[in-house]
Image (cartoon, rainbow, N blue to C red; front, side):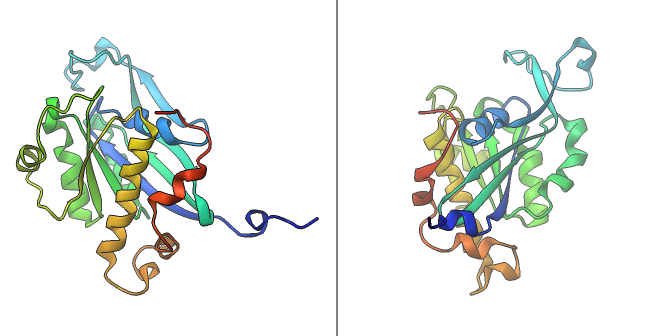
Amino acid sequence: MESKPSDQTPLIPVKIVVAGGFGVGKTTFVGAISEIEPLRSEAIITEASAGVDELYVDTNKTHTTVAMDFGRITLQNHLVLYLFGTPGQDRFHFMWNELARGAIGAVVLVDTRRIEACFAAIDFFEQRETPFVVAVNTFHGQKLHGEEEVRTALQIGPEVPLLYCDARVRVDVQRVLAAVVEHALSRVGSDDPDDEYPNLGAAAEGPIEGRFGSLRGGVTD
């Protein structure tokens, strides 16, 4: 019996970071597409957080990420995306440097009702010169602001991809992740992407979004 190529070819890891403020949907975003049960590090929000964390009383969150969310997606051509969701509370931002180390790119998830909550993430990736895309979480399809309004509020130029998505919907998350990889490739500017981002060269072999067809796990749209 012949062995399948997938049994013989090593997987090629690619790391993507998902960042943003508290309650913007990072945990949901990772969980919507991960083929494995996501690793989550959450703690119950208590009144002791008052005055330390911004609790945003208009949300129904009872837990918050205190270390990271982790998910995995295996695509065609043996490419594996590892997703690392950052904690949103300000006091955990010291962990972002480690979580972003080695990442080819990032998603900054935005809630336009609290747009100031994502400023720290945008500043962080701009300073590190990490390619990132902005994904506006529409929360049940509610597109409250147009693209130009969002760009003006965030002070980002046309070179930064901006998409709308519902963080609960796998096909939306797929589209955002494809945009991250494509944007990272466009930023490399050389014939050998691995010179700057290890393993990114493997992502350049054909259209990215078309490789999500065999996704396992996650939720359906």
